Every structure is written in structure tokens, then in C-alpha cells.
Image (cartoon, rainbow, N blue to C red):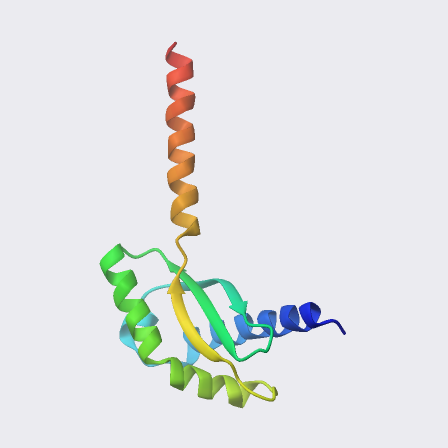
Length: 121
């Protein structure tokens, strides 16, 4: 099995299990009240470090509070992960806000504005 294939499999498994942990196992009110989606996971080739990109529909202030809560709970999340999956070493987690969706939405707005301008002329 090639290294990239292994990383892809572990990444997929981590995404699934972290999602389940966020939705079912945490008692943080801020996290449980807001729908949080894991959009992407970047894992190092040695499987020691993992960046978890999250997205939610809340406003920016709440997004950053959620991000802070997730990073404060990352040891607990990592511990729960180690109980759920069999892997030699559970990677260090680092949560980040995924801004790709926001960029895509702003790009679509610009395209809509250009489309409207072309219709008017």
C-alpha cells in the first residue's frame, strides 16, 4: 500500500470519527448548539499531525468561539479518537476554520453582479 493511499484512508477515518465525536460525545453547549461540519483534513505523511478544517453557519464571532472551544477540547477529542480507532499513534489535532466556502460564496456574488451588469447593457 502506498504512503499516499494510507494517508487518504486514515484521513477519511479520522474525518468520520471526529464528526461522530463532535456530534455525540462532547458536552460543550456551544459546539452542540451549532451545526459543525468537517470540510477537510490535512494529515502529515508520518501521521503525527492533523489539521481539521471546520465550517458552521454561525456568525464570525461565534465561529471563532467554536474554534477556541474545539482547540481547548482537542486533547479530549484525541483521547476519544484513540479509543475508537486502532492506530499506532493518534495524531495531534489542530482545528482551523475553513474559509474556502466563504470565498466561493463571495466569488459567486461577484459573478452574479457581473451577470446582472451584462444584462443591463
